[in-house]
Length: 112
Length: 115
Image (cartoon, rainbow over all chains, first blue to last red; front, side, top):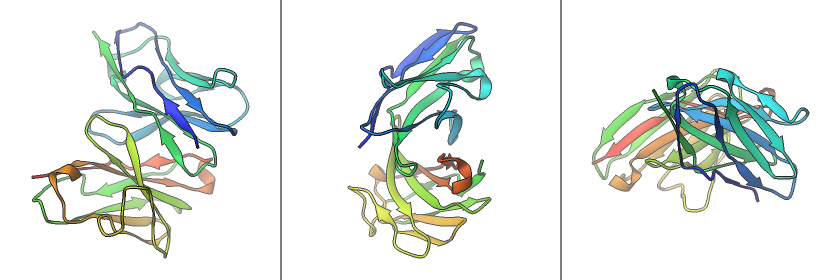
Protein backbone atom coordinates (compact mmCIF):
# COMPACT_ATOMS: atom_id res chain seq x y z
CA UNK A 1 0.00 0.00 0.00
CA UNK A 2 0.96 3.60 -0.38
CA UNK A 3 0.98 6.41 2.16
CA UNK A 4 1.52 10.15 2.14
CA UNK A 5 3.02 12.41 4.79
CA UNK A 6 2.58 16.14 4.85
CA UNK A 7 4.86 17.24 7.64
CA UNK A 8 3.58 20.78 7.97
CA UNK A 9 0.00 21.11 9.14
CA UNK A 10 0.10 24.91 9.03
CA UNK A 11 2.32 27.25 7.04
CA UNK A 12 2.05 31.02 7.54
CA UNK A 13 3.88 33.13 4.97
CA UNK A 14 3.96 36.81 4.11
CA UNK A 15 2.50 38.02 0.85
CA UNK A 16 4.97 37.96 -2.07
CA UNK A 17 7.32 35.62 -0.19
CA UNK A 18 8.18 32.16 -1.55
CA UNK A 19 6.63 29.05 -0.08
CA UNK A 20 7.31 25.33 -0.09
CA UNK A 21 4.80 22.75 1.09
CA UNK A 22 6.37 19.39 1.78
CA UNK A 23 5.05 16.00 0.74
CA UNK A 24 6.72 12.63 1.19
CA UNK A 25 5.30 9.31 0.12
CA UNK A 26 6.02 5.64 0.59
CA UNK A 27 5.44 3.00 -2.05
CA UNK A 28 7.09 -0.14 -3.30
CA UNK A 29 5.92 0.50 -6.86
CA UNK A 30 5.89 3.38 -9.29
CA UNK A 31 3.38 6.06 -8.40
CA UNK A 32 1.40 8.96 -9.73
CA UNK A 33 1.52 12.10 -7.58
CA UNK A 34 -0.95 14.94 -7.23
CA UNK A 35 -1.46 18.22 -5.44
CA UNK A 36 -4.99 19.49 -4.84
CA UNK A 37 -6.12 22.80 -3.35
CA UNK A 38 -9.28 23.34 -1.34
CA UNK A 39 -10.44 26.92 -0.91
CA UNK A 40 -12.80 27.66 1.98
CA UNK A 41 -16.21 26.07 1.51
CA UNK A 42 -15.25 24.51 -1.80
CA UNK A 43 -14.31 21.11 -3.18
CA UNK A 44 -10.86 19.96 -4.26
CA UNK A 45 -9.28 21.47 -7.35
CA UNK A 46 -6.36 19.86 -9.14
CA UNK A 47 -3.22 22.01 -8.97
CA UNK A 48 -0.79 19.74 -10.77
CA UNK A 49 0.18 16.13 -11.25
CA UNK A 50 3.14 13.92 -12.04
CA UNK A 51 2.47 10.85 -14.13
CA UNK A 52 5.78 10.37 -15.95
CA UNK A 53 8.47 12.28 -17.85
CA UNK A 54 9.96 15.52 -16.60
CA UNK A 55 10.30 15.57 -12.84
CA UNK A 56 9.51 19.29 -12.67
CA UNK A 57 5.81 19.80 -13.08
CA UNK A 58 4.11 23.15 -13.51
CA UNK A 59 0.53 23.70 -12.50
CA UNK A 60 -2.09 26.39 -12.25
CA UNK A 61 -1.75 29.67 -10.35
CA UNK A 62 2.06 29.70 -10.63
CA UNK A 63 2.64 26.56 -8.57
CA UNK A 64 5.20 23.90 -9.44
CA UNK A 65 6.40 20.67 -7.88
CA UNK A 66 9.40 18.44 -8.31
CA UNK A 67 9.28 14.67 -8.16
CA UNK A 68 12.34 13.29 -6.40
CA UNK A 69 12.34 9.51 -6.57
CA UNK A 70 15.42 8.99 -4.39
CA UNK A 71 13.94 11.09 -1.60
CA UNK A 72 10.36 9.93 -2.28
CA UNK A 73 9.21 13.53 -2.22
CA UNK A 74 6.92 15.77 -4.23
CA UNK A 75 7.23 19.22 -2.68
CA UNK A 76 5.04 22.07 -3.89
CA UNK A 77 6.56 25.50 -4.45
CA UNK A 78 5.55 28.97 -5.46
CA UNK A 79 8.07 31.84 -5.78
CA UNK A 80 5.68 34.58 -4.70
CA UNK A 81 2.39 33.96 -2.93
CA UNK A 82 -0.76 36.05 -3.00
CA UNK A 83 -3.52 36.52 -0.47
CA UNK A 84 -5.73 34.43 -2.73
CA UNK A 85 -3.45 31.40 -2.22
CA UNK A 86 -4.75 31.02 1.34
CA UNK A 87 -6.27 27.55 1.32
CA UNK A 88 -5.81 23.92 2.33
CA UNK A 89 -3.41 21.92 0.17
CA UNK A 90 -3.52 18.14 -0.15
CA UNK A 91 -0.89 15.84 -1.57
CA UNK A 92 -2.09 12.50 -2.97
CA UNK A 93 -0.46 9.37 -4.34
CA UNK A 94 -1.82 6.61 -6.52
CA UNK A 95 -0.14 3.46 -7.75
CA UNK A 96 -2.78 1.90 -9.93
CA UNK A 97 -4.59 5.06 -10.88
CA UNK A 98 -7.64 3.94 -8.95
CA UNK A 99 -7.03 4.10 -5.22
CA UNK A 100 -5.85 7.52 -4.06
CA UNK A 101 -4.15 8.09 -0.73
CA UNK A 102 -4.34 11.62 0.62
CA UNK A 103 -2.10 13.39 3.08
CA UNK A 104 -3.53 15.15 6.10
CA UNK A 105 -3.31 18.52 4.41
CA UNK A 106 -1.34 21.74 4.89
CA UNK A 107 -3.14 24.94 5.72
CA UNK A 108 -1.42 27.81 3.94
CA UNK A 109 -2.13 31.26 5.34
CA UNK A 110 -0.81 34.25 3.44
CA UNK A 111 -0.28 37.27 5.68
CA UNK A 112 -0.70 40.75 4.18
CA UNK B 1 -10.99 17.56 -17.16
CA UNK B 2 -14.41 16.72 -15.77
CA UNK B 3 -17.04 19.02 -14.35
CA UNK B 4 -18.80 17.46 -11.40
CA UNK B 5 -21.82 18.84 -9.60
CA UNK B 6 -23.40 17.83 -6.32
CA UNK B 7 -26.78 18.46 -4.77
CA UNK B 8 -27.50 19.69 -2.17
CA UNK B 9 -24.54 21.93 -1.49
CA UNK B 10 -25.36 21.95 2.22
CA UNK B 11 -28.06 20.78 4.57
CA UNK B 12 -28.99 20.73 8.23
CA UNK B 13 -30.74 17.56 9.32
CA UNK B 14 -32.24 16.08 12.46
CA UNK B 15 -30.77 12.95 13.96
CA UNK B 16 -32.44 9.75 12.88
CA UNK B 17 -33.31 11.02 9.42
CA UNK B 18 -31.64 10.22 6.08
CA UNK B 19 -30.21 12.43 3.35
CA UNK B 20 -29.50 11.51 -0.26
CA UNK B 21 -26.71 13.34 -2.05
CA UNK B 22 -26.60 13.43 -5.83
CA UNK B 23 -23.49 13.56 -8.00
CA UNK B 24 -23.56 14.35 -11.70
CA UNK B 25 -20.57 14.24 -14.06
CA UNK B 26 -20.60 16.08 -17.37
CA UNK B 27 -19.06 13.19 -19.29
CA UNK B 28 -18.74 9.47 -18.94
CA UNK B 29 -16.33 8.26 -16.30
CA UNK B 30 -15.15 4.76 -15.64
CA UNK B 31 -14.97 5.20 -11.88
CA UNK B 32 -16.81 7.28 -9.30
CA UNK B 33 -15.91 7.58 -5.65
CA UNK B 34 -17.46 8.93 -2.48
CA UNK B 35 -15.35 10.52 0.25
CA UNK B 36 -16.00 11.94 3.69
CA UNK B 37 -14.05 14.88 5.05
CA UNK B 38 -14.62 15.50 8.72
CA UNK B 39 -13.98 19.02 10.05
CA UNK B 40 -10.35 19.97 9.76
CA UNK B 41 -9.30 16.59 8.46
CA UNK B 42 -8.25 14.90 5.26
CA UNK B 43 -10.37 12.82 2.91
CA UNK B 44 -11.49 9.32 3.79
CA UNK B 45 -12.74 7.06 1.02
CA UNK B 46 -16.19 5.67 1.76
CA UNK B 47 -16.71 3.55 -1.33
CA UNK B 48 -16.28 3.09 -5.05
CA UNK B 49 -19.58 3.42 -6.89
CA UNK B 50 -19.92 0.66 -9.48
CA UNK B 51 -22.29 1.04 -12.39
CA UNK B 52 -25.17 -1.38 -12.19
CA UNK B 53 -23.84 -3.31 -9.22
CA UNK B 54 -23.21 -2.95 -5.52
CA UNK B 55 -20.65 -0.40 -4.41
CA UNK B 56 -17.30 -1.47 -3.00
CA UNK B 57 -17.00 -0.21 0.57
CA UNK B 58 -13.86 0.59 2.51
CA UNK B 59 -13.20 -0.75 5.96
CA UNK B 60 -15.42 0.92 8.51
CA UNK B 61 -18.21 1.79 6.09
CA UNK B 62 -21.25 -0.40 5.46
CA UNK B 63 -24.02 -0.45 2.90
CA UNK B 64 -26.79 -0.14 5.46
CA UNK B 65 -25.41 3.17 6.67
CA UNK B 66 -24.23 4.53 3.32
CA UNK B 67 -26.24 3.00 0.47
CA UNK B 68 -24.88 4.03 -2.92
CA UNK B 69 -26.41 3.81 -6.35
CA UNK B 70 -24.90 4.33 -9.78
CA UNK B 71 -27.51 3.69 -12.46
CA UNK B 72 -25.35 4.97 -15.33
CA UNK B 73 -21.87 6.26 -16.13
CA UNK B 74 -22.53 9.88 -15.22
CA UNK B 75 -24.69 9.78 -12.08
CA UNK B 76 -24.43 8.44 -8.55
CA UNK B 77 -26.14 8.95 -5.21
CA UNK B 78 -24.97 8.50 -1.64
CA UNK B 79 -27.48 8.22 1.18
CA UNK B 80 -26.47 8.90 4.75
CA UNK B 81 -28.95 6.86 6.79
CA UNK B 82 -30.19 7.18 10.35
CA UNK B 83 -27.96 10.18 10.89
CA UNK B 84 -26.26 11.15 14.13
CA UNK B 85 -24.19 14.26 14.93
CA UNK B 86 -21.05 12.20 14.19
CA UNK B 87 -22.11 12.15 10.54
CA UNK B 88 -21.62 15.92 10.30
CA UNK B 89 -19.03 16.21 7.55
CA UNK B 90 -18.36 17.27 4.01
CA UNK B 91 -19.22 14.55 1.53
CA UNK B 92 -17.38 14.66 -1.79
CA UNK B 93 -17.82 12.69 -4.94
CA UNK B 94 -15.15 12.29 -7.57
CA UNK B 95 -14.84 10.83 -11.03
CA UNK B 96 -12.05 9.31 -13.03
CA UNK B 97 -12.03 8.09 -16.58
CA UNK B 98 -9.67 6.88 -19.25
CA UNK B 99 -9.56 10.33 -20.79
CA UNK B 100 -8.59 11.97 -17.52
CA UNK B 101 -5.04 10.60 -17.38
CA UNK B 102 -5.32 8.74 -14.11
CA UNK B 103 -6.67 11.85 -12.37
CA UNK B 104 -9.62 12.19 -10.03
CA UNK B 105 -11.78 15.29 -10.35
CA UNK B 106 -13.95 16.35 -7.47
CA UNK B 107 -17.34 17.85 -6.97
CA UNK B 108 -17.80 20.93 -4.76
CA UNK B 109 -18.94 18.85 -1.80
CA UNK B 110 -22.06 18.63 0.35
CA UNK B 111 -21.77 20.15 3.79
CA UNK B 112 -23.92 18.23 6.24
CA UNK B 113 -24.74 19.26 9.78
CA UNK B 114 -26.70 16.84 11.92
CA UNK B 115 -28.38 18.21 15.02
